[in-house]
Length: 386
Image 1: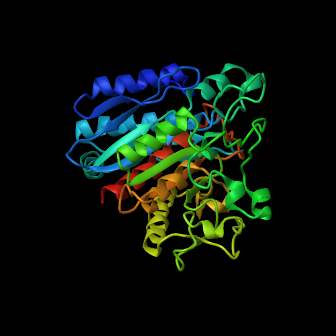
Image 2: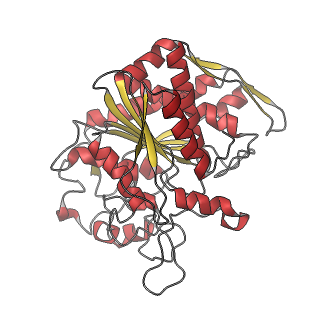
């Protein structure tokens, strides 16, 4: 499968994986078709009984071309390594983007770790959440930076199409109620249907694509989740809507007493509650992902610097509401919890400097992005497997 893959190529690859590995890999059609009528499918890998449920997703934002591809190539490598009883090999790569070439060595994940991941997890992968947006983004250079889905304009309007799916999940979606005036201004969200970037949609989970993710999280009772995006070289954990604190459980998205009083900043009067042990787990697993990328970069300090991902709360990027990873983490706190706890990340892959290409890495640099994501996600999956 050639990068960057088309919508059709992604669906074909999912079908191939299920056909080539029928004892391990099952393909499922998500319950909701896109606005333009496209079916959306995902695969689940399981080599044992009652594995811990894990979900990986990509392709939320149309212009971010690499995430679906890196997820599919990871699945291919994982399945082939498991069936062969072999190490998972991450190929070496020579990075020609800097002024002097940087050589990244071959890296391996031990066969025993591959076996633990496949046999102890029920791993679902929705590689492409937003097929309509991706098809539009890839249709012409003029469309390349399209971010949203392709929700039709309301009423008789002919413009103002699309919703930012990563602002449409049911967690502080109604941000104007959630924040004070300063927080409303600071948050990366908009109620304007004509906003070209971060329109939250007419209601929480209004979009078929976000409903697909929510339904998989709930029905499969996912305990571990990563949503792969680009770019910024960050491993982001909850919360993105406000600063973290582990002292006062009453300071929670569930508590309407704080409506209109949250400021969405670090060190303010409000902090979103996260239990201390859960915060520690996010930092520990995120650090393992970070370390796997650094170690896989070899000894060249230039390679290590270009593989450095910050492990931070989502707020460190900017205040956000209605994101998939925060929504996944929130499910453990609602009245009908889906798991004892949910560990969730947004993985922002790649960078826009040093020739990496930002939202759309060129094919020559894509193997560098791919290798570091595979190393990070295998570290995440190994932690989930216990």
